[in-house]
Image 1: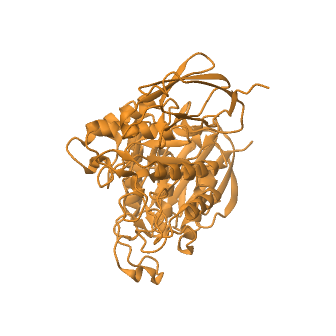
Image 2: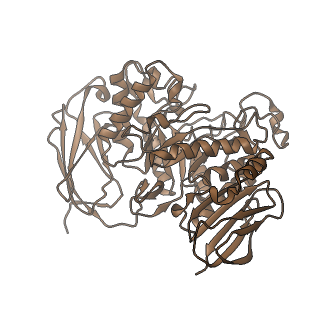
Image 3: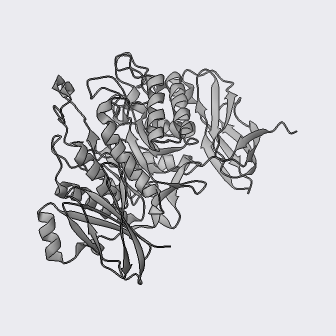
Length: 530
């Protein structure tokens, strides 16, 4: 049997090499890049990364079965000219995520498995803080719980683990670019665990402002070096590479800076991981959708809800319209920070009186009903969302309590979101397109209904499947969009409980009358009978 290294397809091939030279700061002074020859003869290039002392590592995830070879070129004589080989074997691994061919607004894994993007926020999941019970054990438990609930994506800020006294620093000396391998080794462990639970990581390279943050680097060369380092270390994992958080919060050169970072990431990531950038406030990042490095039509924020109060149907409709607008780029759209549940920023401990929303003081903190309805409205626009919960989204710091995914205050709101994914995952959701015209009716009637807080939305695969989400209505009429006469099964879904009720089948060409038992929000599924 050959002693050649064996690697699973979409697994990780990792090699540790030793540099010959002694350098004051190997991270900044040595450059090492690998050229990988794939089974079909094409080439991949990726940097190596420094891992402390004289250790350098190559980390890559092969996507093609067969024999691969590696050659290293470096400014260090111990690394330069090193050759390696490995064989990539079939596996049951799914790989990273990518836009779905033929359905560019939706996602799949590299092996073709459909992926209903269902995200949560854990900005500080790579940090440790004893006061907040934030550590490897509590974070891995958080990943266990979220994966068990059906979440498949969590975005995390790499630099969110630095800048707080007593915590492991990302850089031991940022001005001198002295990176801390011990910090990144802990990130490696948590990221492996996360991926092992089926969670894709939205890896935020750093916030735009703060220390550490993009603005704290001494120059652009240092920023690009850090970007290459993260690509070398993490692009082999199941990740989305998010070049900056709240990019619009710093400096007149912020946009060219972000564009340069995005291009550097694209140039050096051979895996072609999806790339994004994250805005602040009621913002989008649609302006970057024209950039070849930007994989999303938008990774927007665009929240609507005043100071923890119930958002109005009109405000939720604004979320939907913003998402629909940015679908014009023929790329997936994700609202990455549209709502938090029980998010608290201030020091008012009345928050723990456990009333519905006492003390919640952020504009996009929601009641349970508002949280659920905003989530449905985004899904009904053919988009996706990343939610967040007060005690987990920022490591416990914004909740005035410890980091805890088990707090019972969040149970009902979590289950409301879980039911959305369960609903859509039961059929071929990626074939549905926004078709609100099928439930609008006469324009004046629609405008009157909406002025009274009654909204209805439709997704349709004309002639096969229709989903209608309605709030404020007792009855909605669904036009079948010219589908031929047939038998149509009709079911009504309660998004608060998950209960499903089969209604009387419809015969003919439509319209189909959909009756709700109340003016709360309801979901209807109309399908062509087999």
